[in-house]
Amino acid sequence: MNGYTENKDQYIKRLRRIEGQVRGLQRMVEDDKYCIDILTQVSAVTRALQSVAIGLLEEHMGHCVVQAVAEGGDTATEKVREASDAIARLVRS
Image (cartoon, rainbow, N blue to C red; front, top):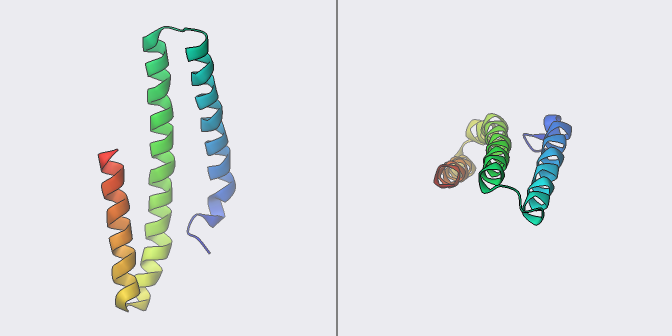
């Protein structure tokens, strides 16, 4: 069971909303909308995706990492490294 399973429906709703925003961006470009308006919407989509990523990371740390640490051993070390790598990717993006 994944850490986000309890909130899976919420994540799906948020991702579908983001998908709609991205389609809206495509229409804005097709319709030659003002650059700044498009950039504003790109920023909104980026923040929405970052919010999903942070939520998933929190769920991963609170479930998968905590469980692995409780069990100990190499699995714990690997889960902590995975979380650290994910955080590094988020910070770089």
